[in-house]
Length: 93
Image (cartoon, rainbow, N blue to C red; front, side, top):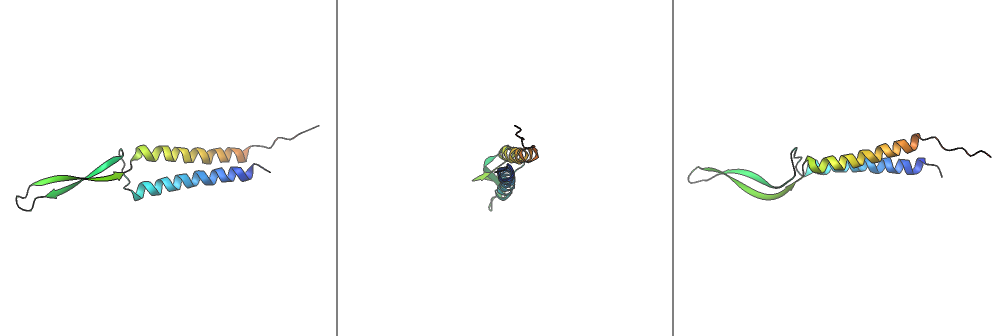
């Protein structure tokens, strides 16, 4: 069995991790700051006209969760590429 099959699997897993982490980050809010557990919604009181913010519990992933996921995916991709580029050992008698 050659090293190309496991290497291609590692590359595919790495690419899937990168793609899924970006998609999940974008779908859940694409916050370019730190992860938040709530969002603030600006509102205005109907009677007095005073502006205020209301906190709503909602998970919004930030860069602090995206960066390690991307790093793990890229490590898998580069590891697979390195395995593919390695020359097979030749056995001489």
